[in-house]
Image 1 (cartoon, rainbow, N blue to C red):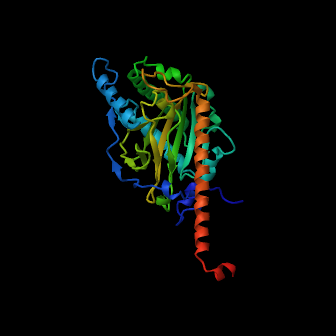
Image 2: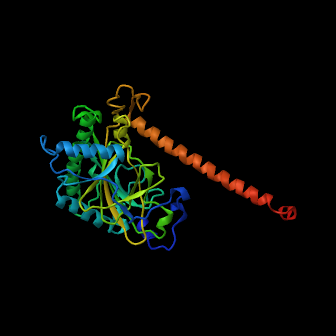
Image 3: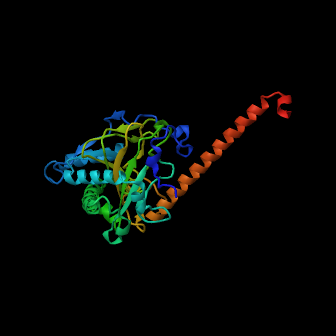
Length: 358
């Protein structure tokens, strides 16, 4: 029987397997460690002071959502020891032998667990479906390293509270009750995705995670100090690599938050790149509306049009997003095939007749 393998086993190869090679227009344009300070860094110290610093902090958050849809927060109130433990235990899991990690293999439609290869992305990952608490399936939560389940439970609770605090700011910025966005999400769903990006033999040819926007409401990302998260706000013409900050969370607004604000707040356009020197770890906490939640602007200002033609459920919004992505991929493949056919035709037409007939 062949030994169990995961993506990490390919890290020592000299060349990248062809299935991971991206089209030229998708490949990284900026290095994983070419850091930029353009993304705002906002301290939340004093955000609870109604008559103090709250107004100033909220103004910075709103501006960041309007201009980028992505920013970093420090002094966020999540205990540094908890953040450190979550990171340490996640790293220990990915250091386990392949057969240990594959005990929680989530292929075949299982909800949550470990994925040793993520389609065309250069990463391994663990997914926790963590909220609502009543829907947790602990049989899909890795039992090694010891203590990770308990730490993940606490981490889930603290991140849910932090995410909802940021959504209050968006609600108030729209002139609504501070609970408006959370209420529009119905029973808010949470998914924690722990990403492990092994070092890569040819990082200039692939991506850790392809370019995308998150479908949900808001995402809080914890990353190590290696670097690799990139963002664009001009439709991919220019990319910047987000400067890692110890203990900070990167905040991304998702499509749902974008639609609720009638397009006022940007959904963060981002990707992850990899490198040939060392592995990288990030922990993304996605906070999404319930499947049956209605997606439609909470407020449409006078003289504005809604960015959506009609109210739809989040499940339908997600289905349409996936269908659009598949259609774009299909059209791109057809275009690529046609270019190859045209190239072959040109080569054939340029040959002497006796060579063509030979």
